[in-house]
Image (cartoon, rainbow, N blue to C red; front, side, top):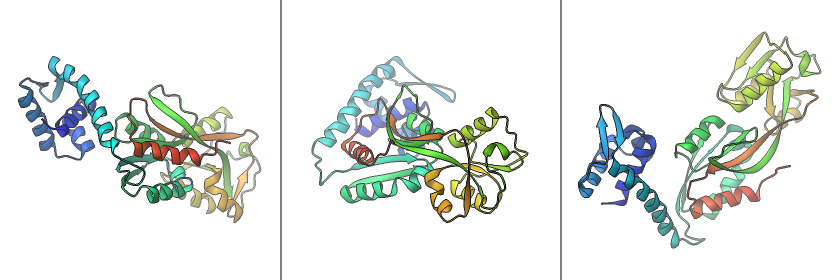
Length: 290
């Protein structure tokens, strides 16, 4: 029996799917099937009941899973024992929202990469809700989201920065307060984006009912659309600061201070390698929680 067979077994159980396990481990489905068959042959007992297209752990499988979890944590620790500052190696799977990626992470990633060139970094940029889904599914190790304060009992969350939200319109707009912008086209981010939900709740709370709206999945596209006079949007100040300074857009007054929080999160049951811990250290050294 080989460690990769146990890794495959755990992935199949966690995802309850051979197909999803293959995607997560970047194996072919035939390889996943072969690993499970080899493991069952080596143990001499069935680990899964195959019920049509569904799979279910047998009693042997359930008992094995408990030991496999412990085994894989110990295996990761064993691999990490010989690592030192200069030869730190491993894999780091990070996810972050678009704004954090563009305006907060560049310098941190550059310094981390220079300090630990032996660590392979894979990076995903996505909406916050999808990032958290991938964290729960074990597809990412660490995520940095930008949204209201997280309250998830299954996640360890560290604050990174406090980001002010501002309303912006084209430089020729004729109103001063967001409450007067009901006739304007509202420009939203994608439906899964925390900022869109926050924006929509803000409008609903104040009974502002826009007659028109546009939707873009890219924050950069939203900014340029506002600059081109297509409408009004709500954006993190850090992402529009340059446009405001260049007077390509104008800030629209809002009586309430609106804040989002950049947060570092990882699953509470995730064993953190030294590569993971060093990245979190780099993040915390650069944080600005206001």
